[in-house]
Image 1 (tube, rainbow, N blue to C red):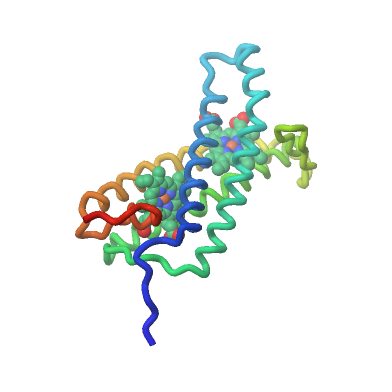
Image 2 (cartoon, rainbow, N blue to C red):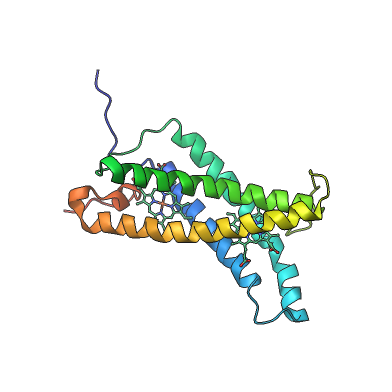
Length: 188
Ligand code: HEM
Ligand code: HEM
């Protein structure tokens, strides 16, 4: 018996890819905006205090979407990827790191907040209590990997977009972009 290999991603997988990607980028961009004021005068401290809850809420939604995506992918075969050997391993490796980052970033953010003893004050007066012992040293330590993982995500996404666009113009390699947009009509 032969099992048919799909030529496109299922709609739900594609929707989870695009929504996780858009929200993760917005979450990272918003944190960088909040944390790069021209100076740390009171209005910018107030802006940070007012906005960081939205960053955290965005990050937790990213975590939820990413976990649904991983669970769905465990039972969904991937469409063919027309690259081989070392390049194939590289592409799949970048995918794996991207997937890991959209899970580890929110978890590290949540842990950082827990160690800082903040709990999670979310927009709309919602709160999750801190589930970790208070440790300012651990919170400060974690803020560095959290920040650099956020920047690494942005760098890897740039590489990932370049790869996807290259494959979109070189259709000999299969149009991976179209495969990630199963609702779009095929090119002639
Ligand atoms: C935070 C942003 C992003 C993340 C975390 C991300 C992550 C991923 C991951 C993990 C995969 C592999 C899917 C799998 O095997 O299940 C993938 C595939 C793909 N992504 Fe992204 N992505 C992001 C943004 C983008 C953007 C902006 C584009 C636009 C060009 C894009 C285009 C694609 C395409 C075309 C594929 C299919 C590649 C293939 O079939 O091998 N991604 N992405
Ligand atoms: C996709 C998820 C997330 C991404 C991409 C992300 C990204 C970032 C980045 C890039 C920064 C550093 C900005 C800068 O210094 O220029 C940052 C800071 C921060 N993030 Fe996140 N984050 C995510 C989720 C979370 C979550 C879920 C929480 C908490 C529950 C959180 C809490 C924080 C806090 C408190 C800071 C400020 C740290 C400091 O003062 O140095 N983040 N985030």
